[in-house]
Length: 299
Image (cartoon, rainbow, N blue to C red; front, side, top):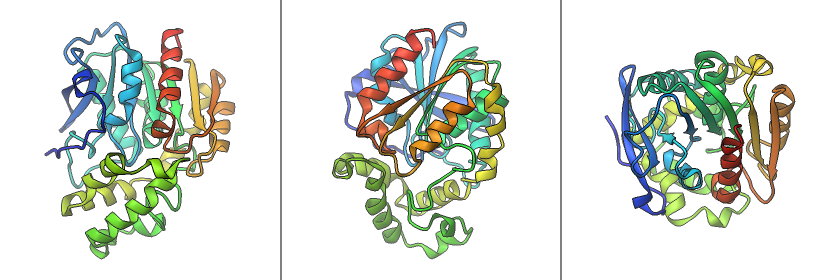
């Protein structure tokens, strides 16, 4: 089962959709127009993984910047136009399992993983445990890492309480919507810019009864020990790596990016000024340029 997604306002003619079956599910992905059936298994392909809340459309500026470089941005399980199973394993390991199956179904053998927020945690699992044989480069953007699987007060206040299995039953749709509208802009260094269609795209997918259950399913799956399980493996990463971080990120503060950089011997850190946790909206061009340079310089 899939739900419609609200596409952020870009040129729709520049992008196209593809679908790949993995395990028991269908994952939707966004790619540059004309590329949905043209991936060369031997070519380096950029794989973009979004955060929570979010979806593949967050990566539209990066897809545009990459141009003819093969690239695809997944809607991870339970997001965007991918299947929305409930219940399902949507921990970082569960997401990594479905993406790993998708990459192998597509026949991709040379992948640069680019993960933001939750997607960065998923990328770490793939690069170190499930798909190191496919991984040729790793980019982590304001990523969950180690014991920092979520901020205690974002994307909702009192996140620890929201992990109670009964939380959906005690939360009215109007309450969930109001909390998201108030809290999500706080992830930006420019809160006033997270409004209109951008804010709607973060909020609207969750504001029906199924969406509410799916949202809280994702919240319950933000398990620090699951994320931390791969932390010790990062020092053994043998492919090039890039860490990109918003200087003003108060959700996952810069010290976590610095820690990641110190942990991965093959990495470098790029700090983006005037950008918060919602760096893909605060500084989309900066992120797109850094990712594109990393890819085109052979990682």
